[in-house]
Image 1: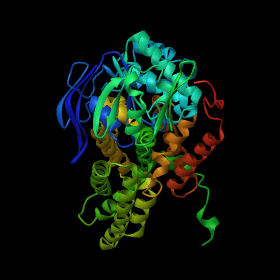
Image 2: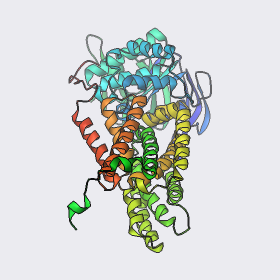
Image 3: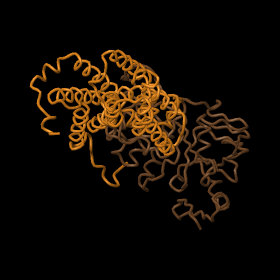
Image 4: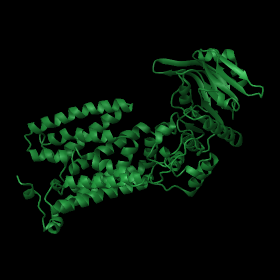
Length: 250
Length: 287
């Protein structure tokens, strides 16, 4: 899904991170973790083709990343605050299909049917006719995911999709993403701060350690040594008798 | 002066309405109201309310300075607002920076307008017309220009409608999808400059909000579907111009006041009315 060969990320004169060499398997659910300011969003920006690697080679779904790649769906950070009062949720999802079309065109019935289909898939059909501002945080996140999915991507990028959600909504979104992954085979890459809600579904994670990105399977990632080093604060990994896995600050 | 002597009912208002200068005023007002309605939704969605207000102020020295170089008020307005639009579009990325930069330029431009007005020794009524608008002062020769601006606006909006909407509502995703967000932003600002130039002649620099933003804000109370918002804001603008002019014909007072008042009343009614689709979101509700 992603192939990094000695990739560095440079913004202006600042090197955000460097020496990224790793491969992320196709169809995986992958977290992007690292402390604040370590360049997680920069990594997404690069995969989207909005920022070229400062050096090295990056392949996304087998190609050099380029803007407007229909095979990638994107849910940015703070999506809820972007839209607001001036549009219905449904029309926002439709823009995911028609927003790049110039000229006077009617929305086709096939496009409408696709919007209905994806709204049902994410469990948003009941509230899609309301405005974004009238939806709860979890509902807005579902709409954002619907918009990213409507073009039938092979890879879904989400920047902090669980931020500002309560535990139940976090769990609902995680379950939804897992279902999208298993039913549609869509690879999912998500930037997260808290690993816990995702531990049961993650295949692996890209972690930004000391200015270098690495990829590893989730079993390797969830180690006290690595996480403590990564976040610069003591972190414990706890396994309950039921087999559930948690990380917490020690 | 006795107020009653100023405000008097003109029983021949039907004749006044039918006169050629009233017809010119009505057509001009309708063209401007439609143009404002077309762009008003985008002004709100993009959060460019302040920028539209600022553009009108930036146009002020253009309008007052036009006499200095011997050109029409409209030409002066267009030149200054388009340059201002390009500057606002190109400079300052962050919204906050933009507000401070725009506000600073705005104050300077208004000062410049006063200077030009005194240099050109323009009479107070010209300056008043620029500040508060005067539909009755629009020459019939300007109708063609207005119609041309409106045609340009319609054609460009038809072509860029969806990408502009996408870039306005959802800039990060639009950018990732390959929509030229910045280019569309600058195109929008130039269109806005043309509409502002037209609207200044109707309601003036200081009352621009009433024609450019308020109708769309009122329409948004009832519908959030882009096409309908645009239709209703144009309709509200046209109705306000027609009602305002009619009352101005009945009692011999400036139409700007009556146009702005009609818009204001419509907006009050819209705000007081239960909004469309307002459903209580249960706290902690599912999803």
